Image (cartoon, rainbow, N blue to C red):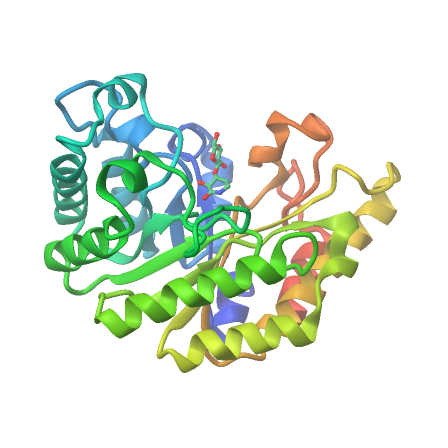
Length: 328
Ligand code: XIL
């Protein structure tokens, strides 16, 4: 069959998309197309604290388990997103977390969640968005409860805990803002590289960098292919694999005309992917959704008119679909 997943596979690339439990479980037309186009499924929110830890003192895996089953019965690999982030905590966690218990809570969470899916997870985003290029700290780590209550070693602790709970999974450090140069890209790239170097030199079990890739359609001139290539090769020299983990093209500042907008979105996909896929360390491409029917941008920007993904709202293939295939 010809699908994004099969075209990618021919080039040795694993392609898949993020999706929400609520969509996949209620929209069978979408679920069918999803399993045809994709080889990997990433629960968009269902493994986050806001879902798994909604209630104090318990873990709720019902949605994530459903996603894992869906993946298994449709021959999809499963990617875990995400164990630690600086926001989107349930209120009770925010109220409870402190210097006296943060380390225990981190270990309990990472151990419990990773063990549950051990042997079934292709990879885990262990730490998400820990770097802030505007941080006043020398290491540019972002303010978060983990950093304040545990210190910078929370990152190493999270990776070791995840590794012990599932020695098979590829452990990923995932971050945003790496695709472009201005305003944040260069400082961000330098800080992320520094973090990865430190982790690798300490022997922390980090195996891959996740580049989110939320492209801005109207800012593609800010992508500097040479600097991006250099960054990818520096990351690869550390012995790390690279995954594009949350690719989409935000069209909120592109022209209203749908035909023109679709062309610009497709071009953005092509221009980005043709650069990053030249780097042999890049193994995986995940779009942040598959169809415009189910994009996080429908919450803002152009809302019901957002067209950031490979398929339109009726699940028809757009120019973006073709551009992605051509970039493989
Ligand atoms: C987003 C989801 O797409 C939304 O549905 C949710 O409301 C908020 O989170 N970077 C990340 C993802 O690492 O987890 C975010 O996902 C998008 C930005």
